[in-house]
Image 1 (tube, rainbow, N blue to C red):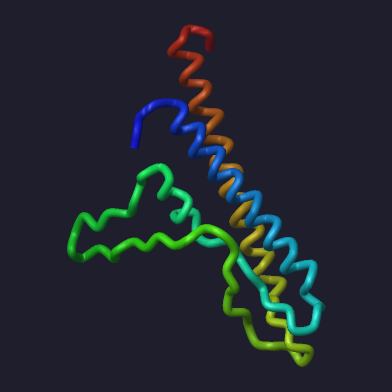
Image 2 (image 1 turned 90 degrees about the vertical axis):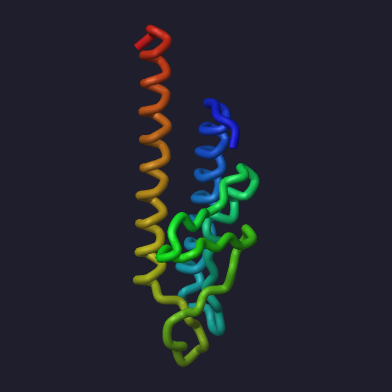
Length: 126
């Protein structure tokens, strides 16, 4: 992984794009909560997107669990009990994921803002 601000900005941009895609998928799940036989889906973990940054999970100790990196894109998720019409969407679970995604968006934008503030200070403009 190269060091430099462009990598940080590119990584933040990629994370925000992934979070935007996840919000879209989760919104589709909630919108189809009453659609017969609808199967909920979710985005693949963000770790899969890190492969283009040559960042891979490393097992630094034999007692640690090994990391896994999958492909990006949406995946079908195991839903809760099937309703009589075959729908497996749990609105409560989807809304929890939406809140989690919102928190991650806030975190990424806060980190970006703090970095830019430090960068401006270092340049004597802050």
